[in-house]
Length: 534
Image 1: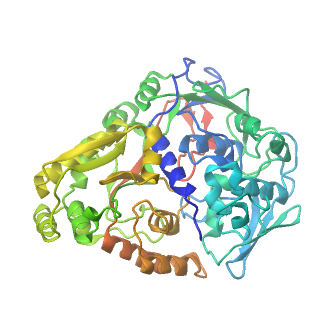
Image 2: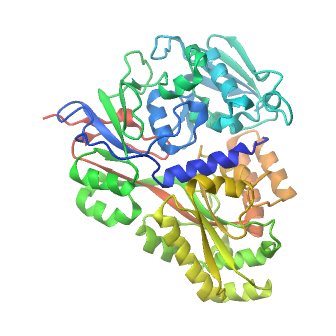
Image 3: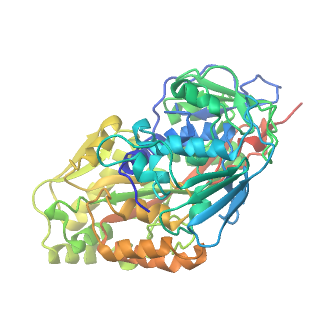
């Protein structure tokens, strides 16, 4: 699958927005959104960047969009496998040409029918280069994508030849190569449909989206204040909302949101600050829930800089970092140290795939460091200012590198969040940098190809790795692909252009008003929540 470089920008945006606040002040409304006693509740959120399915990879945007739209499939929390939602079936005999049958009778909240054309129109708009939408890269493996994204000049068409609307409920998708992971990708918000009404004014639609999901917007998006939604009267799917209404209260700080949750001024928080874990457990009891998550933190190397060209040097850095000590000190033990490039909930994950190179061993790290020629001059560590915890763990890393490797001259390059992405895209970093990955869908391909494949941020190139990814993508099934993805992971770990650090965990807290809270790695599932009456 060919990946456009907008991918790097989108991922970093997602990482920054997931990890740090970017909205304005919180609303002063009482918890419950629709008022105490009403079948309505409130959710703490950071300001979304967009509310068009094809134009955001922000976790906060997706939290809202998941209530307004229904994708062809969703991911089952227990198995990690796709289950049908807007689609009735997704089938292929060769993994290259896929037939998607959609359920008949579905409608958008404006009454317009949801058809195969609705999906084709949305996907084409997202893939159309001049639109500049964040999720453009998801369609790079569909035939005809290149014509919508030419290297030079304007596109010759605005429709991918690989999308064929057979009838109102049938869409045929032809890929550029076999890709066994395709059904899983259809769970991502980029694959949601859009009504014809959207295309008369895409900017207006972004402010007031019309979807096919269990909720609809209730009034205007009040930027940096709140977004209100209510139960959709036209939804006929399997995710019928139990609450009448939900208010997303927008906060600039997770700490402020946590204060409001404790005071009952907001009902649900899906990102309790890790430093508040102990307090949350004592205060909320069984209303504080930690669940697995696919988000990972890494330390990347600019391998295009000759000072970091040695794999032994990079491994020495890895072995000099005490992951458990940092997780305990900075995140109160809420995150999990990692010795794999994949998150534990991803098929094909191996607990100790990294082996010795990810095991804390200062003596061996120093010996390997010296063997590699050491490091002279100033070591710059790069990260954004999006969250205070970034500087905290970078400080711990700096201290460990000083103590264990003898690097005395270490400086921080703390970059404004708005500039961090462009800094990395332009390869201005001259030292190790924080890299974060927010899982799009539970597949090794989602991690390995997008972060270590062609055009990766590290400047790392490895033909064996690329070939293994291509073979895995073309495997006849997910199960058949896993050994190949694992071999590719082994190649990346052997060369260590990026060090795995730790895996995030969802930290969910809620008030005693709520029942049916069921946050998973794949969805906040707000439709399952109701308000206790009486």
